[in-house]
Amino acid sequence: MARSAHDLESTAPADFHPVVTLTTEARSVVRDAIGAEPDPERLALWLEVRGVENGSFVYDLYFQAHADAADDDVVQADDELPVVVPAKSVERLRGARLEWSDEGGGGLVLVNPNSPTPAERAPGVPAEVLDAGTDGPLARRVTVVLDESVNPSIAAHGGRSDLVAMDEDAKVAYLRLSGGCQGCAMSRMTLTQGIETALREAIPELTAVVDVTDHAEGENPYY
Image (cartoon, rainbow, N blue to C red; front, side, top):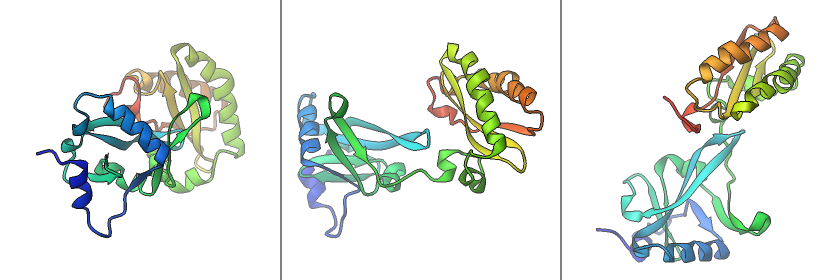
């Protein structure tokens, strides 16, 4: 049986602290939007982290029945507005706040104090390499080749490649593909026959070029 917002609030432990809070204006916007949906009493606002892009979390906000929440999801009530945070997003969103912003025509904005871990920002890159940044001499040369040779070529397909980390000692470049190249089944060929070839020709001392893209998050995900 579906629980009402009152039920969600009344069954919460006395020391319960919501994972995500809503400002008054954001809550009003969400309530109005849910009210325009069929069977609004069944619906909750679902908030989750969809993935990581350009070093930051990206989010999904949508309406779905609160009865669909799994046992390990967090179901809370914000002034009788049901809010669901899927289990995998709880720690990533703890302490976040949903606000209304007037910028760009207005919209809901999630202000999150949490940031992706190094492993989430660039899976497969050693933390010490990621922390070293991309300001080293070899990294700057790789960036020039990407900007001047590689990206103009793959831009025709809506793709882009960026250097996210550079191991200056081992001479290994870690790249992230985006746009049409993210999730594309041909991206492996693009990397090895196109991008890697261009980089090795321009910078012979490179020992490896590693793709750290999360292709499951792309426009045409493959696994």
